[in-house]
Image 1 (cartoon, rainbow, N blue to C red):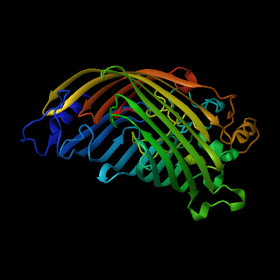
Image 2 (image 1 turned 45 degrees about the horizontal axis):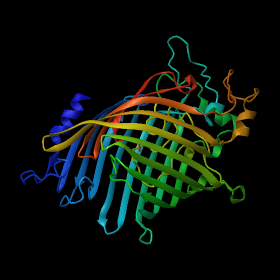
Image 3 (image 1 turned 90 degrees about the vertical axis):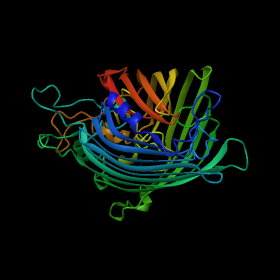
Image 4 (image 1 turned 120 degrees about the vertical axis):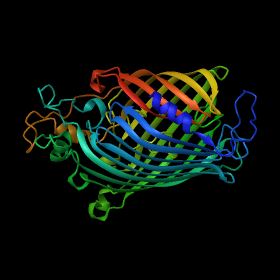
Length: 446
């Protein structure tokens, strides 16, 4: 971690560094023009392993009159995790390039040889693993092989001049490719994914994934004082998403209404100053529900937000929704979640012509499935006598409940925009995972 921070500090440069420094009322250097931050990617995710690769953040602050807000930002990343996952990504956030219009683009390719699959509907899915506890055997029961290409384009414009209120629109495309885990040593193991397919919980037509298009339309209220590290204000987003299957060889009959779905996502974030800009209480409430049609199983964990704070937009569980709960451990047709944090900016300083902050953020996360996915099929598969089952296969475990986790994070923030993050979280119910999990990456989760 130390080497990452030193590299970041040493490489972040301003194109016009020789210009005379100017300061704002807080004593911060006002950044102007271009600011480059090429970095080695060195991270750790308890679900993915150690991360290594390269990334570069490119900021343009213009004449500095908006600092710490930037005129636009680009990011490129190529990285890999030791558990077999990898990412190639380009995204841009351009709030001031076009007058009164915010533009956002994300093009990402994810590949994962060990992508978690714990079944549907949280606690309703059995945590039984037939290979757990067998000496000398590593279990692949709760893993699949998943590759995904993602494109998202979004825009935001003022809503008839109402202060802080905007309408939003966007397009998205996902190409998802799924198969059983394909790693040496797991060839002879039956997986939960295969059992779900054999039981008909995952339909054979959709078992291998597919192509999904989305049309998005929404409203945003944004009174935050800053995007990346706000100290006050509200961000509320309501997004209506129409999704459709565009893979012709897996389209369902229209009469079954399974080739499209309509869903609604609502997010509410609020940042309440407790003591000046030093201490902030921040919380996020979120919910997503299907309104019509049916959703293919490989898309039910996608959180359909218009603009991304983190690279991964999937939940619940893992590093972006409930830190400490198994990644993808709480997925269903609809879900709700909450994140509460105290953000204490311990100390600020200037180093290599950059403004730095060190912050601590104890947190509490919670969430649950509110709209079950194929619950009846799971109950039927709870019995026996279905061909090709693992002999001891268990499926339905009972009623869903509240999943909770708690922990603490440490942040190093450069110029109020680039946030290096370390979070440690632990699930409060052993069914969600028994270990303390560590997540090293970038940005607050909201």
